[in-house]
Length: 255
Image (cartoon, rainbow, N blue to C red; front, side, top):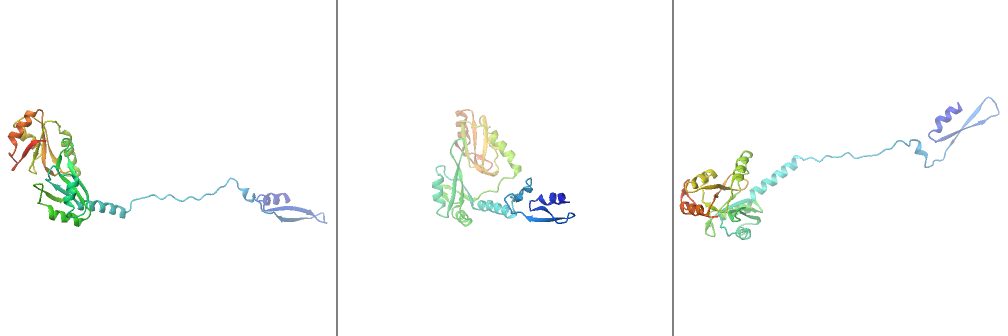
């Protein structure tokens, strides 16, 4: 009995069990003495350990965040202007000086042809507020800059997904050449194929391309036609400058 209790109670090391003989040989008195706590009191379960962890919180987009992003894109689009038919000599700084007379300008970007390095005669201007953008349209659209009547409006809607393959193919198929002409005042319905077929009547055309407003399928009103010789270029200029194409007199000169 003494051995059993001793085994059970001594395991936690909380009390000790001793026996003392009595005057009677038939009985044993059990006495309990508390043990003074030490730093080893809790070592009876050395194999157990406890830790607290904070569950990971997965970041997710809330409807508010999505709405905020969409709102930002819409806001920029409503402040971004297309300014067309500007003189080739006008650069970003000069255009900004003209525009800021009618509103606060955030960014001005004149577009240049990647082949010739010449101005494409149009630009994008982002105003600081929608009110500024509307004021510029009202004051400058239809007016003249450097002797040219400019067109000012809100930029076009982005391309639909279905329009991308045909336009990307048109761009990749264009063959550049040092023998190239610029063709201006094109009707909006003139395509690259129409332009190539038109110039092929008087010479061997390598390639033709109608320029588009970036991010849209809208024609900028001009294009390029490439040839294999300088003679073909001179023939195209003398034959087609100021000629009629799809109801409009086109301008043809060296690019």
